[in-house]
Image 1: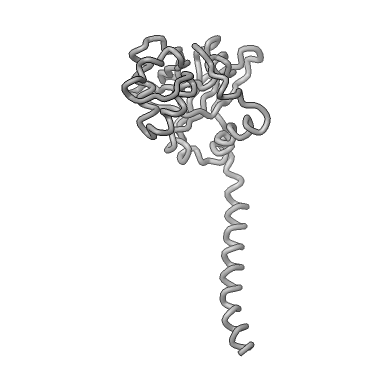
Image 2: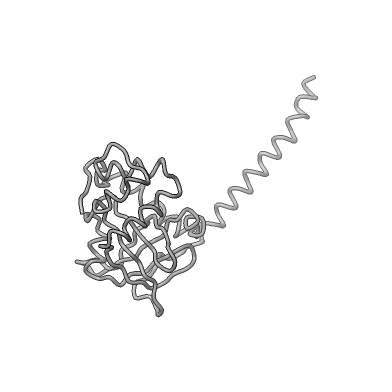
Length: 202
């Protein structure tokens, strides 16, 4: 599988930005992120053996879940699952054990690319073209570039998870709600006083 240099490997601020959905899951916003087809994949670190969380866009076909790596075989999550294919997936509030494996069948890879581009063809066609080093891509030429992609199939399985999911910490809800209510009350109070001030001024 090839990796296109037009997508620089994330580092620094970009890497932190890509990890923001994990914070969303920690804050209990997993349902909202799952509606955007963003899940958390937990792999076992190939060197440390520790659980590693990655927020990643996915598509589902039947019981199978598919991931596409924009950076080929470089991401740590991909290298981790090659060594240890037993993973944990978190879709909203649903946590399941699963097995991950690379997709090598070109027909299956083509179906996955169609699943990704279906949501916003103009956007995904541009991304797919850049990864494939093509000027343009459409549904008719998509089959020509399937070998350029690193695609992973996730198959959920029964049983307890071996790797812990992202913990949800809802302690932020109370202070944020308190600030929101206080702000709303303050704005309402200011609006009530404004007409009186104008009346006295007249």
